[in-house]
Image 1 (cartoon, one colour):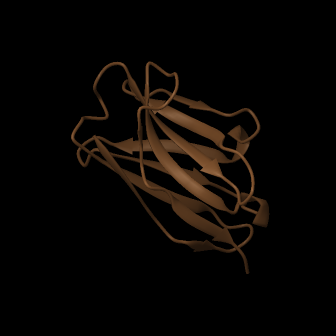
Image 2 (cartoon, helix red, strand yellow):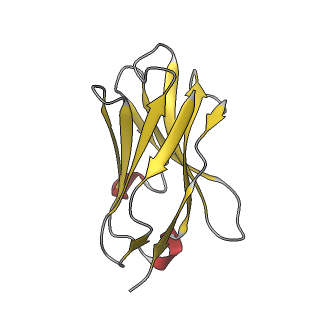
Length: 118
């Protein structure tokens, strides 16, 4: 299984960050896999943002829930992240990942740096 993030590397404050993860080697609708977004700000630890399940159900971190939306395009085997009203504190390397049965990660994308700056 391979995952690849894509999207703008620079977003202005107050705008919406949008990233897409393209999955190959496995279907995002296969039971019982969940498809996660995780980020790591510079010099800090990993932070789980949320995931979308094989069924299409979504689950978000409580701290980011009000600004986060995760969706999917099953025809292209992709899932996407939208994070609204971004601030410089949202600057991070963003990873997409596969989460088996909603726990842990067994495959990671390479990550993409998103900088929030005017």
